[in-house]
Length: 104
Image 1: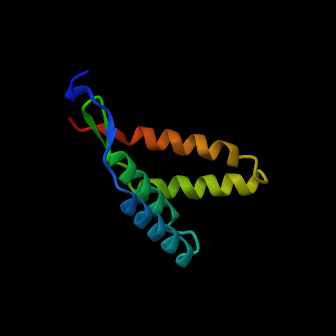
Image 2: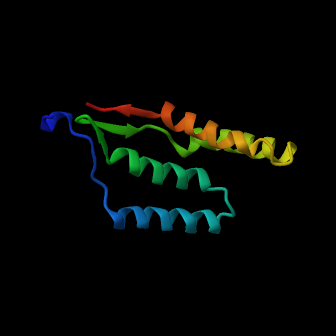
């Protein structure tokens, strides 16, 4: 296996803790309105520090593009008395993958 085809993660623990804490604080202070922003920050940090077979990944999603979906998912979950929440995780993973690309 050559150095070009290595897969690795180069993020640090302090960065993860920082983004996670900031996300929680902002989510709590805004009563959940900024949760999509927090998700994008933490997920973007994870993806942007990931290299697969020598190719770095990049997250292109934004809180603005997630916010509309998030409202829809919350409404559907409320209307279906929580049943739709089982699909929210899958829909969120689909959204994340759709906004993840290789940059080299």
